[in-house]
Length: 188
Image (tube, rainbow, N blue to C red; front, side, top):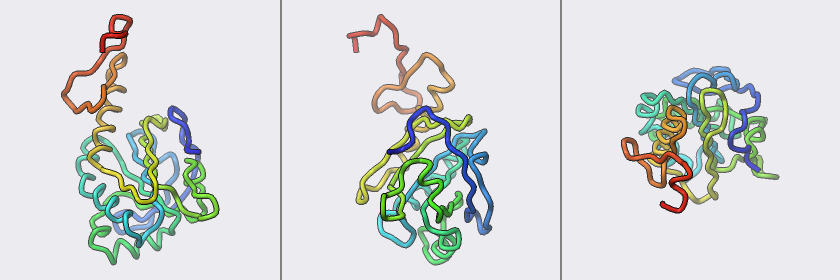
C-alpha cells in the first residue's frame, strides 16, 4: 500500500548519480523545496526510458517552479551511471537518479513489488515541509506524462499559496479556482 497523502516522508539514506557525480542523499535533501520522487521498475527497460526522458525534457520548467526531481529504482547508482552514459535518452537527465538497491526508499513509500525487488511505476509530489501532496501509481505498461505532472504541481503550489481556494478538474495556471463554501453546495 503506497504511503498516504498528507503524511511525512520517512527517513532514508542513499547514493544518487547526479550530473556526473555520485552524491549521498537523504530525506533531508527533499525538504525546503517542492520535490518529485519518481519511482520506476528498472534501468535498461522499455517504458521507463520514455518516462525519464519526458521528465528530463521538462526539468528546466520544473526547476523554475522550485521543484527538484529524484528518480528512484532498485538499481544501483553505478547502473544509473552506466545507463546515463550509454543511452541518448537517459544521457539528457540532469536530475538525481537514486540507487535504492536495499529497497529502503521503495518500501518507505510502499511501492515495492512483493517478491520481485522492483519499484512500481509511482510518482509522489512532496511539499517543502516533507508532506506528500499528490501521488500516482500506474500498472507496468502505462507510462506517465510530465505535462500532467506539471499541471498537478502548479495546482498544488497554488492551493498551498492560497488557503481557502481549490483547483477544479482540468485546472490550468491562470484559470478560475473555487472557494468552497455553503453557497457553492449543489451549484456546481
